[in-house]
Image (cartoon, rainbow, N blue to C red; front, side, top):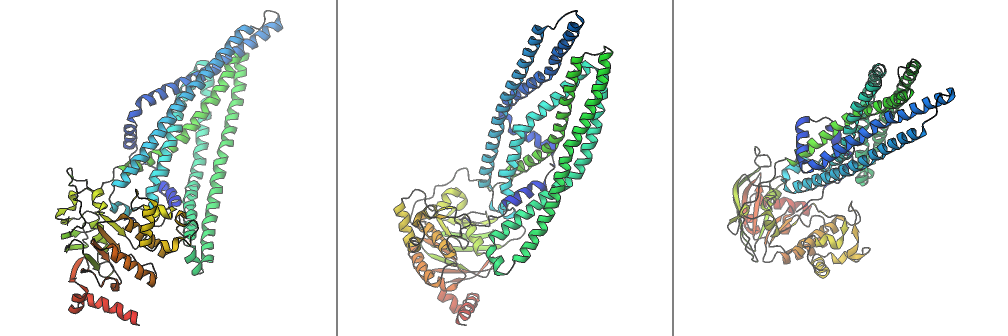
Length: 614
C-alpha cells in the first residue's frame, strides 16, 4: 500500500527549494490570497496596527518632551549662575515622570500587539500546515510521481516557517518602521527645517553604501545557500549509501567531491559574512559623521538663540530613530519578497488538482467472505497521451488465485494500482461484485485489500506497532498470532526487547528478508477479503520462501488473490494466469494450459528453468 523510498534530501532539497523562488511571480495576487486567508483575524490585525501606531507615537514624543526638561535644566543653571533665578526641579520632575509614563505606555502597547500578532501568526501557521496535511491526502499519486519528497516537505517546513516569522516579526516592524519614519520626520521638521534638510543629506550616502555592499554580498549569499545544499546532499547521500560507496572504493572520490563543495562553500560564506559585516561599521561611521555635523551646526544655532539646547538633544535622538527604521525597511523588503514567494508556493500547492472526488451517493460494500473482480476494457496511461494499458479485460472469480506475469514494464503493477484506485482509469471499468469501484468510497474500497509489495515499507517504531499497522484495534496476542503465521516470531526472540524492539529510521537494524516478513505479518493481521502480492517473497532465502509460500497459500484460501510474479515457479497452483506484454493480455489460462500452448508464457518459463539448471 505504501512504499518506502529514500528519505534523503529534505534538508538540502528544502533549502534548494527556497532558493529556486526568491522572487514571487505574482506579488499582488499572492498578497491578496494571504490577506483573504487571514480574513478571520481582521479584528486582531486591526488592533495590532492601532497598538503598533500608538506605541510608536508614544516613543516618538519621548525625546521632544525629555528635551524640554534638558532646556529647563540648562536655563535654570544659567539663571542660577547669573543670580536671576533657580532650577525648577518640580517642573523637571513632572517632565521626567511624563516621559517615563509615555515609555511605559509604549512598552505596554508593544507587548499587547506583539502577543496578539504572535497568536495570529502561530494560528495561521497551524492552519496552513493542517490544510497542507489534508491536501497531501487528497492529491493523486501522479502528483508525487513528479515531485521529490524534499519539495513537498519544504512547503510544510521552510515555506510555512518563513510566513510565520514574517507575520510574527516583520509585519509589526513594517508598521512601526513606517510610522517611526513619518513621525520622526514631522518632529524633526517641527524642531528645525534647516537641520532636517542638512540631516537628509546622510540618507542618500547611506543608501548608496548599502546598495554597493548589498550587490557584492548578495551573489555570495546565493552561492553559499547553493553549495550548502550541495554539501548537505552529498553528506546525506554518502551516509545513506556508505556500504555501496565502500564496496566500490569510492572514499577518495567522495572526499574530493566533498572538499570541492566545502571549499567553495567556505569561500562564499567568508565573503558573504565579510561584506555583510562591513555594512554596520560603515553605516555607524556615516551616521556618526552626521551626528558630529549636526552637533556643530546645532551649537551654532543655540549660540544664535535660534534653537534651544533641549531641541538639539531631541533632534540628535530623532536622527538615530530615523536611520534605524530606514535600515529595517530595507532588510524587510528582501524578507517580504521571500515571504510572498513562500506563500505563493504554498497556495500553488493548496490549489493543485485533487484526485477525482468521491461519488456523492456512495454504495456500501456488502459484507461477505469473498468477492469477484472484473476488469472491463480498461484503458490507462500515467500520461493521457501515452497509454500503457490497452483494452485490458479479465475476470477473477471469488476466492480464486489470479497470477499476473510478464516482462518488466508490461503493466503488472499498474493493474494492481488501478484495482486499489491509486489512479483512476481513463476508460472502461473495474467492478467488484458487479459494482463499479467508483461507486464506493476509497476508504471502504481499500478496507477490502491487504497488499504486500516488493518494496517494503516500515516506519520508525516497535515491531509490534509496525505489524499492528495492518489493523489498529487488535490485542498484542492477535499481533503475535499473525507474526507466527508469517514466521516473524521465529526471529523476533533473537532481537533485543523482542516485539518491543524499535526499528530505526534508516531500518538498518533488521535484514531485508525480516522486513519482508514483517509486511507479510501485517497483511495476515489485516485479514483482507482481497489479497495483493507483488513479489512478496523476493527478499527472503529459499527455505524461508517455502515457509512463506505455505503461509500465503493458507492465507489465500477462500480469498480472491492477485499475485504479481517474476519467478514463475511460485504460481504453479494459480487458478488463472494472466500473461501481459506492453499493456495487453497476450495469453491466459492455468500453468499446464499455458505450457501446453508453447507460447509466450512457455518461453518465459523455460528461460527461467534453463537458467536455474545452468
